[in-house]
Length: 197
Image: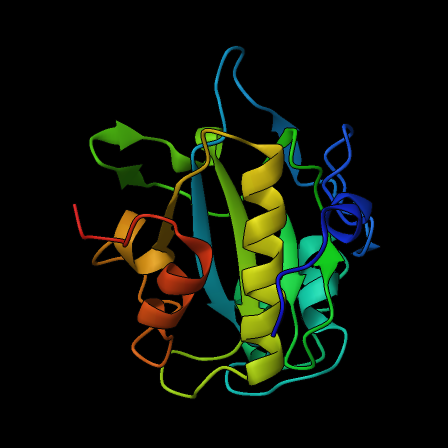
C-alpha cells in the first residue's frame, strides 16, 4: 500500500473548526470548552457496544445525543441520566462518525489520569470503537482508526500519545480490552505505546 499523496492527505485533514471532512457529523450536547492554553496531547481509545455484546443499531448515537430510550432494553435503564460523548465513533463497518469538535472537550474519559496529569478530557481526543473487550475488532475499524490517527497528528503537532480507557482509568475501566491490537496501532501511527500509570 502506498502512502497517500500530500494532496489527498490535505483533503481529509481536520478542519480549523475541529471537524473531520470524512466523518458523518452528529452534534452531541455533551461537551464543553477545553481549558484555555491546553494542547491536545493524547488519544484515548474506548470500546462500546449497546446493548453489551450486540453490534449495529442506533443506540450508541442515541446515548451520545441523550436520546436513548431506557424502556428499549433492561441495560439502558442504568444509562438514563448518563451524559457522555466522544469525539469520534467507528462502527464495525469502519465508517466514521463525529459527535464533538476536536476543539471542544468531549465527556469520554471521566475520572482519569495520564502520566501524572488528571482530567484527561482536558487534553485528549476520545475515539470509541464498536466492540467488546474480548472480541476482535474488525480490519475496517483498524484501517479507519489508523487513518484518523494520522489526520489528527497532522492537525495537532503535540499529539503523540495513545492510551486505552483501561490505561487512564485502571480498575474502573477495561476497554478497549485484550482483543485490541495495540502493537499494530502503535506501529502504524508512530504514537507512544501506552503504559499503565
